[in-house]
Image (tube, rainbow, N blue to C red; front, side, top):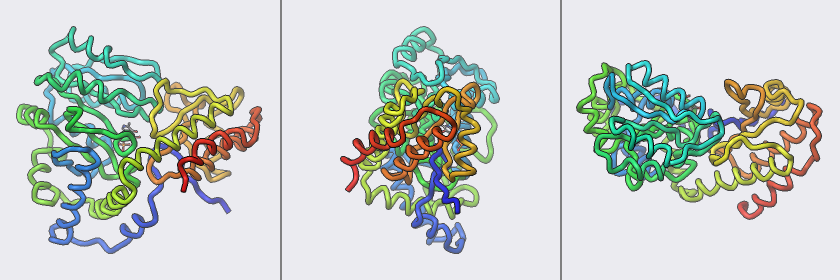
Length: 381
Ligand SMILES: Cc1ncc(COP(=O)(O)O)c(C=O)c1O
């Protein structure tokens, strides 16, 4: 028997309640029954984003919402600033490049977080910048960026948007869209939202909607003007991903029941416990300012990370994530996202201990688990 544990930063496990909801027969989407669910879900999403703006739902993974953010607000030839600190910073850059937008980058070593002053200095020197694009949490490096502080720098600039990829930060770290002054935030279903992939969310500030009026990039399916109009009437412009939206209604009830502050606290406790375990086991962390979505660390000397991750997935049943690009084979990332509690963390750490020992590393079995338990004991019960 091989019991499966999904401990990678997306897709993440889906709770039984949500799976059962999604197993129900599909209904028609232009019905009062679906509109009632849609309305309920729209209200719930506003609470997670902390906004009075509509949070639009798009059928497509997180990248669809990232692309929608760019093509609905910018114009070819506009200058933008991308914080390039990992795989997903590169994605902002690549989307901008595709649509003829002039991007400059703040290039950081993978694992580093941008400093607000770096963005501020750049904007002072380049007042023509129309948007700053950032990840809240850069999943490829497990680093958290200072979203609130950067929003503070941009919010009073009427000609510059702050666009945040919150795909692994919304629902993990409290994100106050309105209060902080974020202009666009996007996220996806398969991370903290505990759903299968295929649904993404996007919110725009009043300032961003003004940019939409002036944007000329051709768009059809991802035209947010059409979605805004339809979604104000509790439906989507095209056939809605009903099954995922029905599942989302249950997820939002679960958030409500747990309390969003406890959702953040749970992520923090599991992240802290994993970091303490890594320290006790002598693993070097990757991120200077770690996100609570996942913890990345360098594999012990002599271990080939890619082989380790494959072995654990195929022979032990635990799916961790490895490294991407130049970090391939060098790091392991352990998720804390979504439907993940203290004993998932213990499983993850115990798996690391036994797995690395099997791969020849000098590991004191139980050292990481003990360190994690010292933190988690205050959190359980
Ligand atoms: C921070 C971040 N941005 C963007 C993406 C891409 O999202 P998707 O794969 O849902 O298109 C991911 C997925 O892992 C992510 O973690």
